[in-house]
Length: 343
Image (cartoon, rainbow, N blue to C red; front, side, top):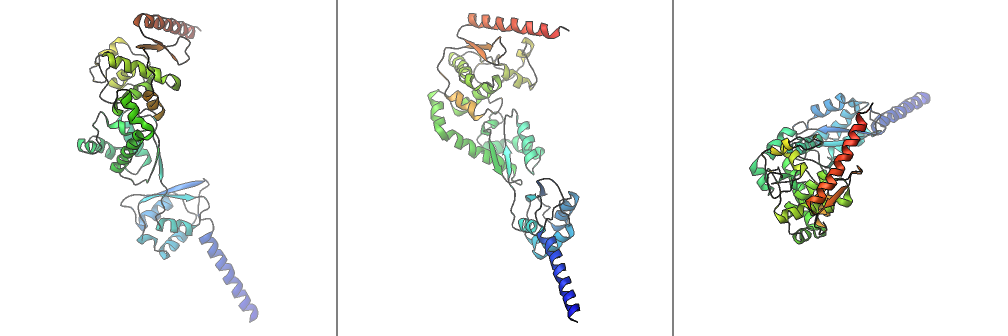
């Protein structure tokens, strides 16, 4: 009798151990470091969550998870969101995470964008909302007015950076966050005051910086390039910026601008129009904006790529010198193309 009791006790202990192992041991079925469970708006239900877990093969035992979730009343508290499931995480830990709405935020990284369609695609990639909804918002004058921008100045609220938000954040709040960060950016480090010292508004600084951003990736000459455009503005000269023509044509693959391109009728064509274009042509980096804010006082009115193909430019204060430097670059470019074509 004692032996039977001992055997039963042993079986109970073994069974309890196996049960505990299923609940507290690794409950994941993938080899990656982590995976994500996405619970969409309107899909925060038991059936939808369990279907997602099974379809994406996230758990080694979905049945055990369901049993635990039922007892923890997960389904009464489940909410839409993005949940990080770590390799080796227990079903108990996963169930508690969902029940307690411990979402994994999205690190929304913005680099250089050119048009609002780029922004819509980026938001679509990071968040639950899709690009169609985003474009509907971005094309709505009333939505833009609440952000104190219009279709031309919209991108000025975008300061390239990484922003932490929830996956379910709606588009109006995403843009609202960008607006808040933009306002904080201009208040920081005396940027508004520096713009005033340059005789410019933040919008004008941002627009000039967007052109500079497209002209060069050499940080140590961005200030001089900015000075060229500021000097042309002061003299009432057309900016004559090639990147604005690419923007007007919406052809960002153009390598060279020819005379035929300069005829495009657009307020962004700075060969045909004086003054700044009505808005930025890309989202410049904070570094570029700061280089515009501290642009040196120069008499430069022209610049052209150096003939050594270093990526730097040669600056000039008069057209005669500029023509000379431009001819040097053109000769070097012709020679390079000839060498390239030789078998």
